[in-house]
Length: 464
Image 1 (cartoon, rainbow, N blue to C red):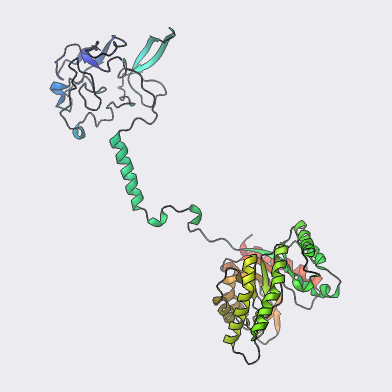
Image 2 (image 1 turned 180 degrees about the horizontal axis):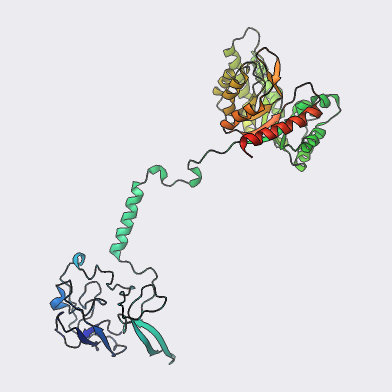
């Protein structure tokens, strides 16, 4: 291999040499290396003044700022035949030349001077030697750009990022480790999906209870299939199939209802049944829980996620606390099977043991089950209707909306739909608004009008 460095034609001269001197490629040394590739003479300008590294004045004979001294410890260099390598006496940390950006390092060329040629497109512009000729192994003449600093040296593999020393690598990894150590433990190893996120915007879908068409369903004028068709004509999102009007609980019948709704683009998020868990007799509560199994199975066949249930009426002579305990016991027995089947039991505020918001929330506090939830009926609180709604709204998974609510005198008055929608939006409600129509007007006339009113109010409140 050819020698890596050029040596002065007149050895022993110091850095105070004339401003221009001749340099020639070093010839073969005593080492068994091959002869140099070229012995061409190279003209190079000497430094205009003594180097800032005064320790080199006698030992280094530093030729210029764009090439390292032969004795620089950064790159071992051959030494004329003695086999030894001279070391720069200046510590590395204080060496001004090695700290300079012009210092040569493996894979990095020195910066050019104003009069030097540069290779177009080079990442590190450097002094260039004009086109040089050479011969490949096949005998073809080749041309290439070679920097003066690297001329006569074997080519190195290109490294776009530049070589990195062991010391630099250890320094960078230590700094990175220190940065990680300063981060809180809660931020390490967490999945982005588990990080706290902004709360979801409120979302409300429109649905209708089959109970709203009870006048036609009980008389035989309409079947549940007809109710599904009517809901599709109204442009609703889903329906609540009340179990009072089922022809059967056989899977074949339930599947027929499910497929009809699916083909019309309607969801069946939940069904509704009648229950009375507020029973003093334990045997009655057990029997009530057993009867719930058929409706839980029916919900599964229909693809519904929940079932509306009632707490029941408070028995004569019982205290509210006793009624709450009996209701909780009955619900827990029914929830054992609901949890196995993956169905939610949603307790509706429907008078009796759920007449007030405080009683509803008391029952909720005693049931620790992921399959238990609340259904908010916006017209079933007889006193302080809108204040009671505010208490229950944060825990509701579905809602019944009616055209009328109770008045302070015990009568009925039109509902303030916008006030109810805003209350639900404030707690971030995301679920169905099922219309449960109970007024005297003809359902086929009043329900379409109420659907349009409700849809416009939701769009106004939610801004969509």
